[in-house]
Image (tube, rainbow, N blue to C red; front, top):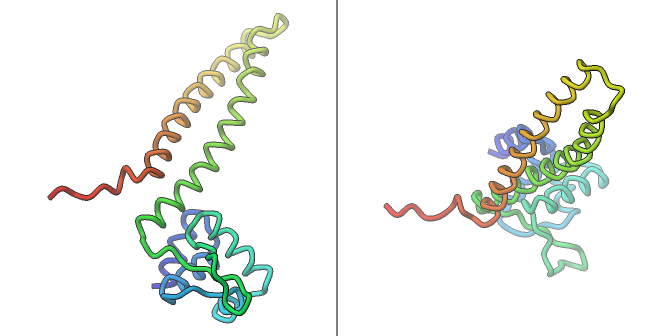
Length: 162
């Protein structure tokens, strides 16, 4: 089961070792310290730190307020619906931010190019085609933002009335 979780997370852009760590923590049924995780995973401290940090960022793992022998404690999110919600909203938001910034930067440059006096008709035609593609991309990322907002609000996890 741990390998299946790791393989699945790997499909969606998490490292295989992060997926293994999440799987181990999921079935451990208790908070773990970095040292305990390191022992289970047989990983270097730097790789372990990276894996834990990425899992905490995507909220698949939570850093707890309490400590054990002055060591930080971490616990896996065991609700698969919440894990899905956190993991995918984090990944998709990153895509939205990167692509929206790129589209927003390219728009004025393309517009200026299209309005340029000393441009050939072929270059203007290609720039207009690219501008059309960017408008379509902009609509897609606006839609995707609405999807992520709904995902974060739990819209897709409402109880089935049946």
